[in-house]
Length: 441
Image 1 (cartoon, helix red, strand yellow):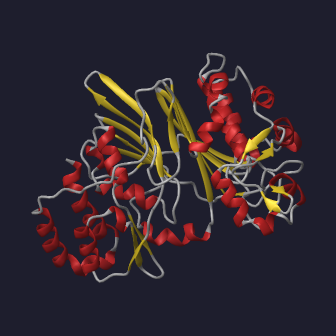
Image 2 (cartoon, rainbow, N blue to C red):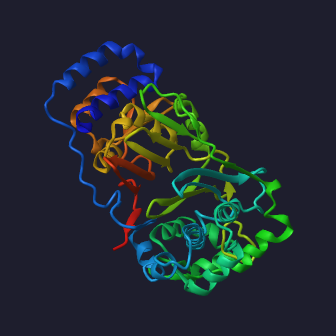
Image 3 (cartoon, helix red, strand yellow):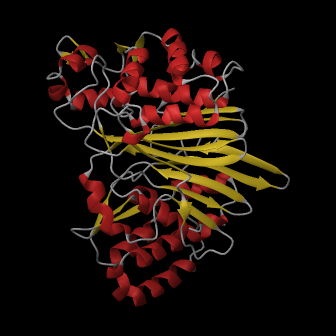
């Protein structure tokens, strides 16, 4: 069913989002009628990776295939064991990812996470009250709060001690970290601590090399020193998703932003902030934890004293998070990248996401060609390689600037669909990134 209306829905999005198309309505209606008569459905490209994995007990959503290899020896010790609770596993995953990606998951990054625990859903968002204060660590604050709120049997210090004793002393350089190091070689070499950590001779490390792990105990000691962990320095909200208006009958939409506003006008904000985001997730039976850090690394590069962690500025605006829910579905999605990530979630409403009733149709929806409205100057970015010729021809007929791009956005999340008395639940990943869901055998 979804293949029959996605193309027409994409055209409707064009009209509903931008006022500059109103004088084209007559041509639009004519084109819609012509397209609706076509017998051919949208042919979606087959995904090269698993976008969901509900049949396995434990899933990990990780950066790429190389990261899965890093976690393989750690998995039976930390995750496939009864020695740690689900909350403790989620906290340890966060700490490991912080250690692996000190550029994108710095302790000073903003942290958002969506949690399902004991059949209840929660959303949290952690940032600093003073965005220019790079001495505070909202990511660590979020991890500490996770433990305090849901399982205080092992505190942050205790988990740090465990990880310092288990994690290998040398951390593998991931492909994306290698790219970051190469692109910022000249800035990195100016910082003695960062150069010592990420250079070998006169060259930055590559994906075939490793860097020595910083002691997490030293980092957490700095977090607790000088009252850096005090609540008075942090903005953090619980269950801050609010109801968004939707015309769909029987559909409930809750987001942390108003995705019904004219998102094209907000492009300037997202374009100004050169944010870097990093996400990871774990699912164990019915529980799941999905986290995303976001920050702006400013030059010249600075590091947290005696560590290789970058001092990053938490972004001033959170990444958009939405829950789409009705009697047959419970879908939570986070739009993690792009110049205006809210638009991608907004477009899903026009694509009738409330009719999605399986992981297969959800994958088709997420794989469908995306477009993005940008302003100053007005233009459209469009994933032409994913669309059909009829869709492109229609866009071109609007006589409006269109720029072709290979990929737009990156959406992750979770989904559950009710099939009779049973309910299947899984993490969900976009096929546009290198991220992978590790469906552990």
